[in-house]
Amino acid sequence: MLIAILAALLSGTINNDCGSSESNNASGTWTWPFEKKIEPSIGQKFGNGRGSFHDGVDISAPYHSNLLAITSGEIIYVGHLSSANGTAIIEKAGDYQIIYQEFGGTKGYGGSVDVKKGDSVQAGQKIGELGHLDGAGSGDHLHLGITKGDAIKGQASWDKDDGTWLDPEKIIAEGSSSNSSSNIPSSADKNKNAKAIYSYLRTELHATPEAAAGLMGVWDLESGFDPKSVNSSSGATGVAQWLGSRLTALNAFANAKGKSKTDLGLQLDFAKQEFENGYKSATSKDFKITDVHKATKAFLIDYEGMANNPEQWFLESDNSGGPGRYQRADKWYAKFGNMDPAAGGAGDIAGEEGSTDCGGDDDSSANGDILDVAKGWIGWFYYVQTHPSKDLGSDLKNPAKKGGTDCSGFVWLVLNKAGYKVPKNMGWFTGSMESDAKGDHKYLKEIDKSDAEPGDVVIVNTGSGAGNLGHTAILESKWTGNSTKIIEQGGVGDSVNEGTFGSSFASLLSGGSVTVARPIK
Image (cartoon, rainbow, N blue to C red; front, top):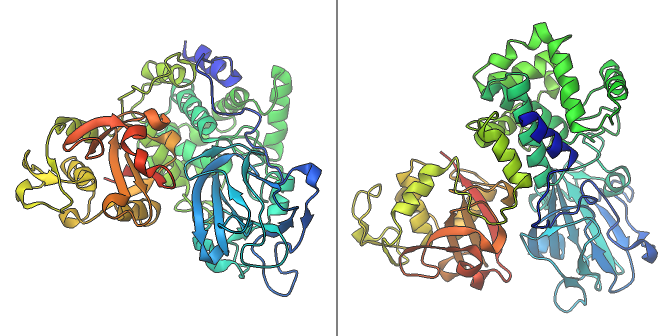
């Protein structure tokens, strides 16, 4: 039954009648930020061409030309950045952050911004219009920058050739930088592939949950689970980035099966053949490992053959400072480690991609302890912006039912009770919560909305987030946009209550920044 479900899932035959906001043709597509008929011209190029380093490319086009997203992703920032010479739009696409700046989006310059933070965009979708010069250079143009780091922090390196910034022309032309895959799967595609891979490793190769996650940590960094991934410099192909004689063997295997070598199901069958034959003696023990990090390193050495290449291990972080193989493996273990691939796992796969239930009522979560605490306090507390209010009592793990707190205080109390990390004495507010989720990760870590589970935290801020400029709540369901179920203090009531994201956060959504974060234990 599981194999049949996997086959249908991977071939795309499982569907539902609910519709989809995704475009299958957009995944992995890169395009120019202006319509081809405009024939935009390239001004200052990327690199050291004019005596000093330039962190992107300047592209000129006629006034009021449509500004287009160059690939599919999520808008993570819209606003004024003095370091970016005015209004900037930042898009996250896989491991990349893309910044659109200097296009005259600031009020009075004639341009426009047609997206907001949290929007999903497809390659070629209009995100604004070109206005007059917005603070730098000469002539109406867009400055386009691409980095694998943080685009805002990267502004400090705009004139330094330190590896922070990548050549946009090359990435658009090739579909990738020289050391990454040619396609970037959408978050939904990546999660679908990840679930299929995990189930396959557990059922077909009898891997422990830890071993399956360890191998996934290796493959995630290699390809992002994109079976169409092709390294533009080496030609390495597929989820495992097969190369040389192994790539030749993959091609022969695909021809014998009458399938494309970029079919995920075929690549998993090919990997199984490798594990059961040429790599059996080296890897059979690896599938029995019960430590995620030990499994990650074991597969990296025994299957990827990197024993003599420690400079390519990237265990703690990748070559741009992003998540390394260990962190990626930990993520998949946290997501799938408790899933029964032969029973609940199969249903999970069918439910995610093939269910006809369009609602957001799935209350299952690895953060069930958070949700249990939050639900147990519905109807508790009165609203007051004091941290902590004295009438909560001295034991904040067991606060007084009739005590007072606000939205961020309620989230703090829940996480504290559930055993998660929180600052001392309720020492945060929605602004500092967002900052921590995006930066230090002491208590929260930002996640994609598509990865959100019940028990995760949503934060919306306008400006600093202080006082009434911000709101936060605990998710009661997976993310479904405005219909997402939440548990909050305040919002639409004076005590802890259940609501929906769209109604409880309505006053902040126009111009507010939306952050979804996972608590750290």
